[in-house]
Amino acid sequence: MSFRISVESVIYRHLQDMPGEVLLVKRASDCRVAPNVWNVPAGKVDFLERTYEAVVRETSEETGLKVKVVQLLSEDAFEIRVGDDKAYRNMFTYLTQATDNDQEVKLNKEHTQFKWVTEKEIHSEEYASLMPRLKQIILEVFKSHE
Image (cartoon, rainbow, N blue to C red; front, top):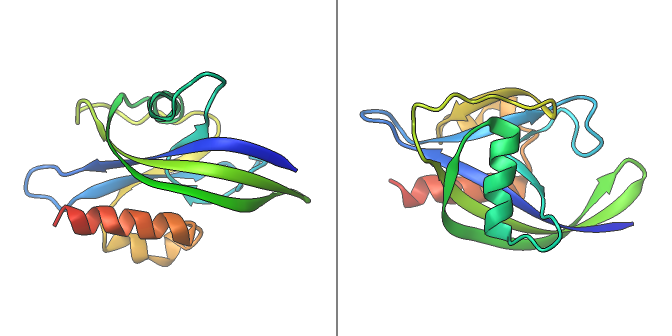
């Protein structure tokens, strides 16, 4: 059994004359936690690191994007399975925005794909692996930006 404090980065953008979008990333098949699952950039908080610092760092490490924190969206505690073990997470989910919309996404080895998705697209079967808890948070972000 393990315990970890983690962060998630819901990166929202709204380009001119386009619907709002959130960046989803697909985890690689060889990842120990959640292989082949669509998610948002996420990761653990390092010792003596604040959660808002961790979300900026993790987003940069996983996507190459420089982001700013807009607000804390959610604090959750839950249990997940990691292989045959149980793991416990305290998750801090932040709304973030890229500091420059012209930045290119550059995935690290933890991910194989990325997609900027609209509210309509997030309901697609392609993203069925997205955790229901996270999907609900993302839908609330879309709703708050209507």
